[in-house]
Length: 257
Image 1 (tube, rainbow, N blue to C red):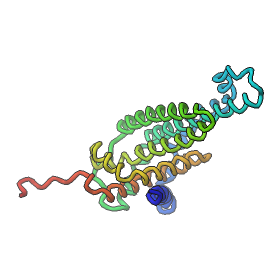
Image 2 (spheres, rainbow, N blue to C red):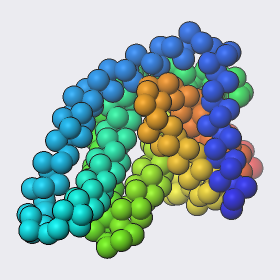
Image 3 (cartoon, rainbow, N blue to C red):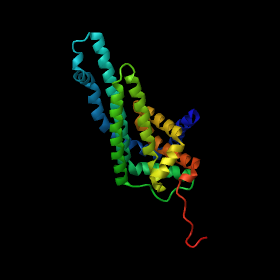
């Protein structure tokens, strides 16, 4: 399992090679990421600046507590709120970036598929498909944020557990969303996809967690987003190569015995 988790991390690193081989194409992928980051920053910056006021509002019962305990409680609550906000922001950023930059990321995906050989004929959906997938990702991101908040309420260990769970769940969502285009292009059914993910859980998680951690680095989301699109295409191909029976079989020619 550990080796498979590491393989997922290495898959993301493989995506960075496109900055060397196809710099122009990767630069195009920066544009929608920058736009999404600016839009998202307009919401996150005021939230973080007002975090002390939010934690005070959320813990009125601590007003009469000694300053030390009050400060520790509100710091822990603020930490959990920030972790939940980051988990949701990751999903929103990915959904918004993929929707805005669908033509750019489609070109990156197609280039990787072509380089790897035997690319699918279909382009894996269009703009409205990206919008629908983006809305689904945002809804799931909201659920993840709620889970992180609830786990964060556990005394003593809640803050750490909530943060770790937020990274893991957000990473899993990212991996599933980013590999979607390759699977859509091959018209894989939900059952096919479930079988593929079941056969590569640790590898998918390693890729997703590594991507999510890169997103947490200031400016990392912008640089890593086109990399993640390229690497997720490699990941999808790896998953299908590991479980070929999960892919749809080409029907025999009419009249064949």
